Image (cartoon, rainbow, N blue to C red; front, top):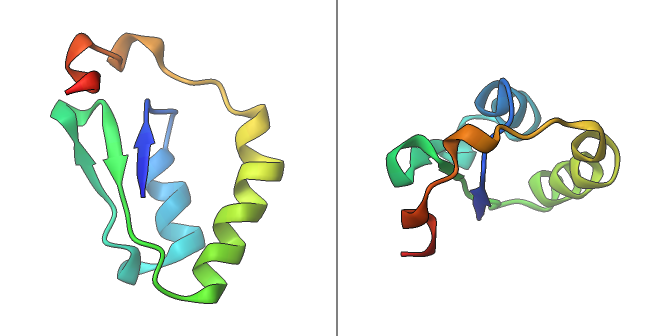
Length: 70
């Protein structure tokens, strides 16, 4: 999974919700995150976060760059 763009403490949030097996890491010079959804519980946690947590999240525009399209 790729998260294009960042929000404050996003790595900590995903780590708490998905655990170590998600292999969360910054990519594209820190402008995006990459992580894995390997188990049904991880997918459920992701879906819940998208519906409830991320809709209230303020995204960091200053981390976006032209190389996100590459």
